[in-house]
Image: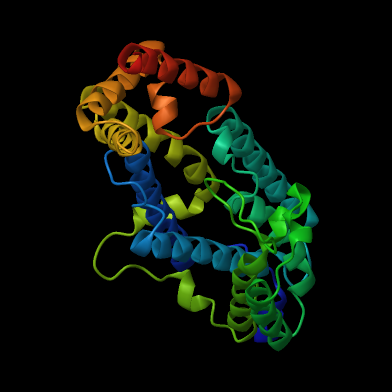
Length: 322
């Protein structure tokens, strides 16, 4: 069989190097989410997972995932789109994304994930089909344009909830995982261009039997072969482990942070000692009512606000009444 006919065949065999790359990205994501969970439960300072080096780490992970999505799309769906397998995979991703939205809406409504990495992958996979057989140069130019657009153009028009997923808003939405189409679709296009280049020039054999030189890569390649399952399972497991730790070894970091903030606000109008007693009263009352955790984590709803206001009023009446 000629080289040209080999190139025209869709890639059906596993590429070990690609599975390892997915596995590395997934393990990195698990490490990031574990850091986020420890911060959420008060074991790490606020902002640890969302600022500085960890913020860059998270963006690098997201970019690597999306590049691999584009690369894999080329391998599976060129030169002809295999609609049955494509639709099957897309359906799995959409269901998983919808489940994440539902779960976060129930448990963390203030940071619901309405367009996270899986939502992006689903939409990007559809749009990416139009670039599978486009010239590589055009794909790369489009990637640059997609990346640059939100840097130079934003409009309040795109602040509408139904348009936030585009990423051209002027007010950033609150979400625990937000990966808008612009600029992140650029990473998928880069992956498509890379996949096209390697397939067109018959470089895929470099990935077929590639192994880590310093250790066994079987765990990573296994994770890479079951990427969606790992993605869906790792975060519940991570949260569960940190929750168990929090029960066995409770952290006072969130309570101390709330106490410090309360006392700073209070001492603007009253003495230090009376404010210390007032803030202790508020914390005790919140704990008794079972709302302390929700307040510490910044949850906001009408019922919680009313309970917090009643608690503050009771403590004020007890300590500040003439």
